[in-house]
Length: 195
Image 1: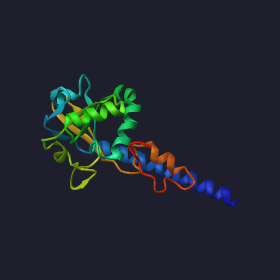
Image 2: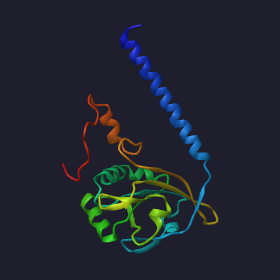
Image 3: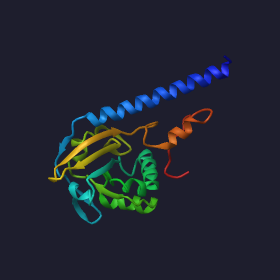
Image 4: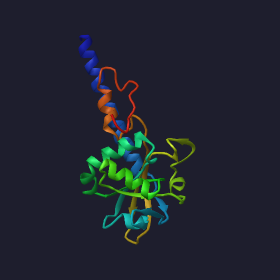
């Protein structure tokens, strides 16, 4: 067997292992017990909004935990979600929550042409209670980026069925995976607000 064939065989085996591991992770996540969640009240551009109202007529809600306007990484993730919003909303309700005040959020929404709904958790325990608070400050924020997925039962009770954290190279931003295909990978690249 040639060195090229060995490399291709190893690559194919590694890809198969990765796919198996991803499927196992999905199966394990689905077996995790649902976590009851109170009906938090956050703030949108038109005033206070309960978590239960964010579902609209859906029983599932994907809620992105965004660190706020100071984070270029969170801005890049949000830009990506904006591009696939219609696909996401064809299956579940979708919102972004940050610790920024609503007026700060709306300036960013306007500047970046985001189409998703955005809510402020400022002045609430929501971020910390969901496990996305940080004692360290990053990009003017004590919040960490990630996602919580909620389900609203027929009786109106809300449960969190999944959560995950965001970071460079995660499964939620295709930019990293495309850069991994480059000869030198992402190198020391970091997202910017403008290029």
